[in-house]
Image 1 (cartoon, rainbow over the protein chains, first blue to last red):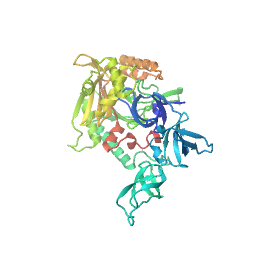
Image 2 (image 1 turned 90 degrees about the vertical axis):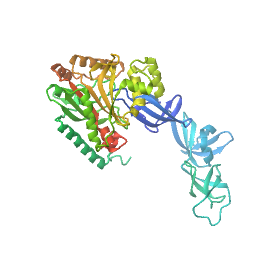
Image 3 (image 1 turned 45 degrees about the vertical axis):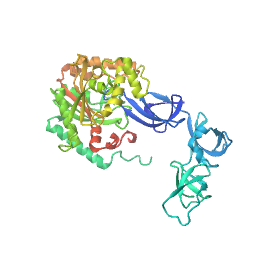
Image 4 (image 1 turned 45 degrees about the horizontal axis):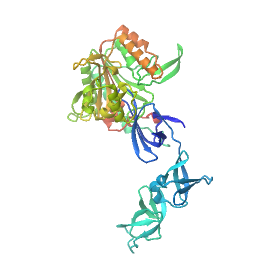
Length: 188
Length: 328
């Protein structure tokens, strides 16, 4: 794997730090009037999601991380692992552990395409699409005539997520939800 | 990006920039300081360990030569002083490889001026006056009083250490802790630079103009050295001016001794070899000019892009430049 010098650190670049793959979030060049230059770098640890702040001497380098973001379709769960399949026609499948799946577990729906992040060919995280359509499996009965604004109630979706929805939504309806904020957008 | 042909500054900002540069020229005209223009290219370049020079190959009457792009107009301006120019200033385009960021751009404009016969103290006052002029504040709105801060005192207050006396291993541990990096083999000055950049600088110039004086002798660059009255330690006769956490200017009681200057160039190049950096040709013509005799006095370099950025309330130097490096 290539290594990258501090002046090549751009947002999104994947590098190895303390044995973990990280993504550069921010890189600030700092230099006293007449002295050694440093780079103040924010990195997101891709294994834990935590953001680290580290200082490097300018010109130092880090090894690149063999990290790939791939589109994959969710297939099924066998009670232990979740299985995703590449969408490039290869039908290649990847098992994903619960730890790597994280919060995305509550947004899973078969045949939907997710972004699976691979490190050395192992899945380390799964990102849902920004918007997803899911069916309401449980909510209080809708209020007749209340189609206007005002008021909301919790609704459980087929994937297990619970979102706030307007009072007029009924069980069995399919909703469009923003997975980043966890908010209801509209009826699908 | 489709829009990357566009300027990084708005046209309105560029108008303001032009007006402020006009103020700078008026400031010096009022004080009888002559505007000069010296070459961007030179046969010699900066040997400073922490400055990376760019170079070009050019065909000249002497044949095919390597010429250095200046990191500051210092050498050429000192040759003018030795030739009897009297006080001079320049708005000079300078180049420093690798320096791109919120506060840096690969090429930038340096306002540099020299005052033969003027003491460093008087130049500090003049630099502050220039800053006030460009900041365009009405009386009463001035950015507070000018405070002189000794380098040693800043470290004592912020970090409870004497930067000159603290044992190297203590200093390395402190720097490593503050920066979150290994400093086990770092030289003393690197540790001090890190602490200065990360801990002290951000606090400077918050209530007014802060001028830092009495730097370690090892950081003298092209300044004279003098004894610290406190305990006789050698310190550099230079200052840096800070406003809003931003280093704006760097001034020297200029070194005029040719032999001392030659020795410092050699030290620099030895350090460059040790660090496996490219050696930079020493400016033999500067040494010859010093040999001839340069009047004693002080000089200062001010990052005019940063000052304009502060004057116009922007967050980065790119916002006051027509096309910052990523769009050049």
